[in-house]
Amino acid sequence: ELVDNAGKLMGEIELDAERQLMNKFLEELVKAHPKATYGEMMIKKALDMGAVDTLLISEGMRKNSYHLQCDSCGHDWNISLSRTEELPLCSKCEAKGDVIKELSCISLIDELTELAGKGNSNLSFISTDTEEGSQLLQGFGGLAAILRYPVM
Image 1 (cartoon, helix red, strand yellow):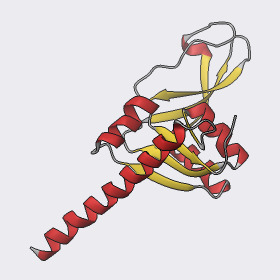
Image 2: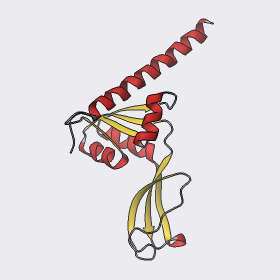
Image 3: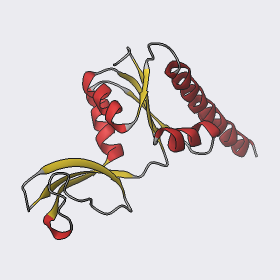
């Protein structure tokens, strides 16, 4: 019984820490010069700049980052898709189907984790078991960051 109670308490402590991180992110977001950002493009920009203090990733996020090439026109580009989405049309000539080749594919979480490591950023996975965790996934696409300094 003691072990069960300790396990429950540890789970609550972890969820409370996640809530505090999400609240800090939300508080920063509404400031005039926020030290917070969200969305894949802005997160990657901030990670490249070394501006991310803490990267928040929803445990419910299921996306892959693809490097694609069109055999029709030779155009290549990067895109993130959920694991159930089909490969898109070429962003240059709008070709589709077999002419779109997948050059590489990596989990978006793995890609962002690697970028965070290069910038000495902290990483926190946020459970969807709380209101704040659900808000991260539904309202912010599963990605948010608390920054070291404001990024424009």
